[in-house]
Length: 227
Image 1: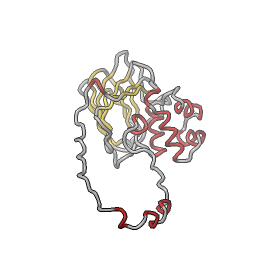
Image 2: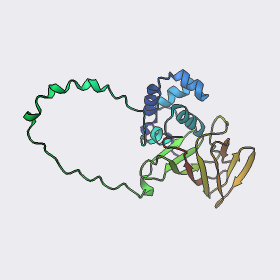
Image 3: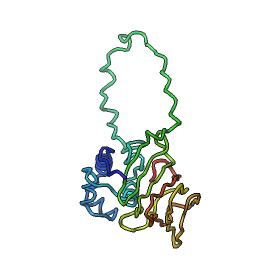
Image 4: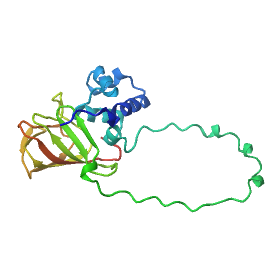
């Protein structure tokens, strides 16, 4: 599996969202439960978060995963200036000087893409041996649709702290064997096995084998822009 590509833009987008929330690196690290140096390294593009840290960052900042990872979907809200900045209406001069109004036909927007070619997926390699490949041609506000690859020994979080986040998730194992710990139960999932549960239940995934695990994963969020 290839190393992390800082060209994904995760670092600059994380810095932008953090700044829009007026949080220092230390304060964000405290809230997420990681070191300030890790946040700094992620923002500078020299390190990459685990799945667990990524979900914690998105949840704490109120950002979608799609925006942080790929620049798609909703980013930080822009601060629109007050209406009075436009100046007094009289500056435009008498209405009669403008001449007849000219209208143009609205240009029809191209239809959204509906096919994602396998050779052109958006991909990011996360820490602890996990790769995410987005299976939709554009951002989906309510859904994350991914192929997830766990390298040998890969697991969902370096901290071995179970994940908890918004939504409901569904997984299907394509190849390999993945251990899923959900709540107080542990499940061994092989090819053809699937799993579905509320994502707010503590959970983690581990590949304890020497082979790669390929799986299809879907997370359906409770509202747009949630992680």
